[in-house]
Image 1: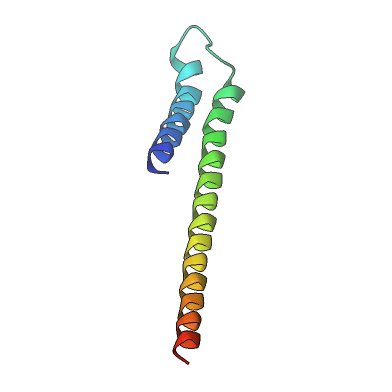
Image 2: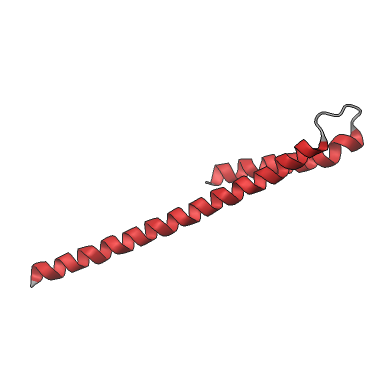
Length: 81
């Protein structure tokens, strides 16, 4: 997730910079302002989705490990009895 977060951040910042720079300092309009705005916003949305998936996945793995440890503990108790 680390590398993808950096890439999404760079893309978002690039879109934001181009939104500000493009109409002000260039004689050629590279893309309409709406495109640059969407690039910046969609990068943020993609990062939020990525972070949400990572959190949910980590919680699921943590819960699975806890349930697995609890199940193994019960099996050991039954074997000893």
